Length: 122
Image 1 (cartoon, rainbow, N blue to C red):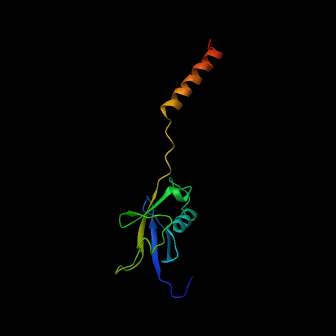
Image 2 (image 1 turned 180 degrees about the horizontal axis):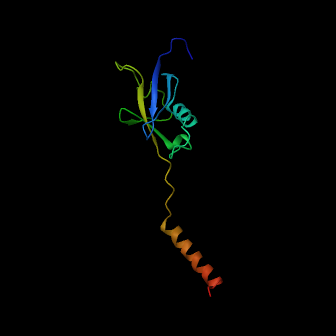
Image 3 (image 1 turned 90 degrees about the horizontal axis):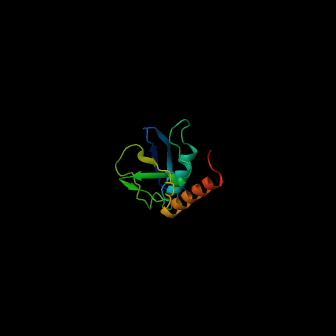
């Protein structure tokens, strides 16, 4: 880290109101992806919702979802006249499982019928 680099104090609020990863971060070199990795590493034990990867986590600041590849400076995270730490909201959104297409469902029904033909039920 360069001497005199601007730092910003952040904390992250998860779904149940718990604040985690309260620290100061270099504005020009810290990426959103790096913050997400830290959040996953420091995620409190025993929570019902636990992110498994960076892609499961969304960081929200000033109503905007932040992009993984952008730095805090690129994302325009600034102190302004706000005393204390800036609080960002953390949303865990695991990827949605791919829904089966009609063709896949028809193929599975055909397999079920074929199984019944080979193994009749008494």
